[in-house]
Figure (cartoon, helix red, strand yellow):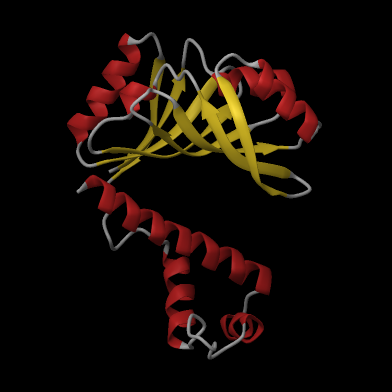
Length: 211
């Protein structure tokens, strides 16, 4: 089951820093070690702020440290962030529950996208978060399986790319030719393939971790 929940926590480093900078933060993945320290892959948007200001806020906040930048663009910076305290961390680090991603929202809220194996796991998670003082609302949930990971459009593009040898080495078709055959732009082709591959790899890794 895939579920998206909106959480208004009592405290959150991401909400604090996002508010001070006036820019959204996306948490791509988080993992808690045995010592309770969380390692997160985090993306900061450079909307009206600078890399230096972001690094200063990370250093200043008592719950964050050691931000290693792994990718920079004109609009974003991405890196590995060490989080020393995460109120909801223990609630999320449970068997058969995996955080696919999270992002800050307005009015001091976080949106979390989760994968859980069964309904009782989701109910138990929401209950634990509420007992910890969070306000939780369910935005959406849906049953997923191997046949609805991709949208119909994504499946069509991936199937055509595979059929024409785009994933072969050397490639049986160029991106330009494949885009022409599909009657779409190259940028649309590359974005669709990237999103599709990420979904498929993500689903594979999540299944392995949940066994």
